[in-house]
Image 1 (cartoon, helix red, strand yellow):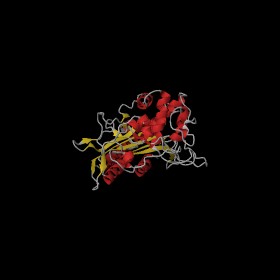
Image 2 (tube, rainbow, N blue to C red):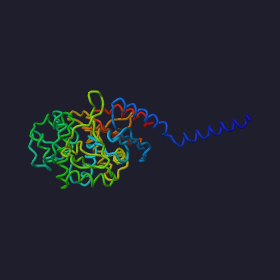
Image 3 (tube, rainbow, N blue to C red):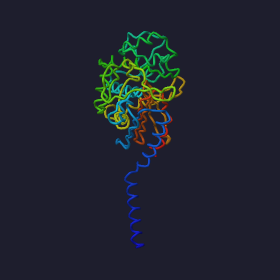
Image 4 (cartoon, rainbow, N blue to C red):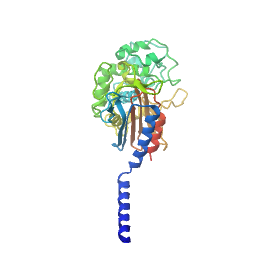
Length: 359
């Protein structure tokens, strides 16, 4: 009898060992799920979508909460469409890289080569400086500009800031600027002779099979689009006011799913549509005239992971949206988190997920 019991225990132990070795990510995903639920509760987030890939394959993709309060609709990582906010800048950067590959423009050329009618400033501005937030173009001056609900084209949106003086001589300071990306998208659509969103669709979304990614058109009906929320005084999510993001699509106006954004992130690890040289241009930190690194390339923050390896990322904050994209090329890992709530700080949660998924 003792021998039978011993044999059974040995068999169960072997089965447990086999399951562990065949599911090396199981413990990581359990830990990540606990952290995600805690994060959701802490910030009162209505809905959140998280997708993680390793070596080009999804290892965890999980929806939390609801895309809509009424009727209650659960988040699905492959179909629930969120505002991705400033992750849009990363998409713009890869589209820019494609134009560089096509020799349609030069990063160190003056913007006036491509948009000669843009009002002259005290200093020249290069395309690279514009995409790196060191051109001196201002950011939103107040919440009214940030949440502007006036439908405009990219060209019309330039009127918001084009006659304002530069904040500084380009290359001397770093100043995060979504308006800078409005001007960058004007350059790109002039060069490509194609509406910016159409160029991005043809150059990025279509070849990467990002079937749920598109521009946020304020009066359009989008299947599986989440409702957008803000936090009330009592920390309960309430529906956010409408916003028109068409003119600033390059800096914060794309919609997508977490699984689509993981596909996009993997382009930087396994390039299919742009060259490695062009990716290096947009992911390498720029330097000020003093030689100081800014920590930002073009559309990507460039830092190091907990392992001391390269880490490219971007956070996003928009009306009814807080998001983060993390790319670790050496570990071959991509992490994306999308939420439908305004004003959630994503950096610390991103670091927690990095600690879980990076060995």
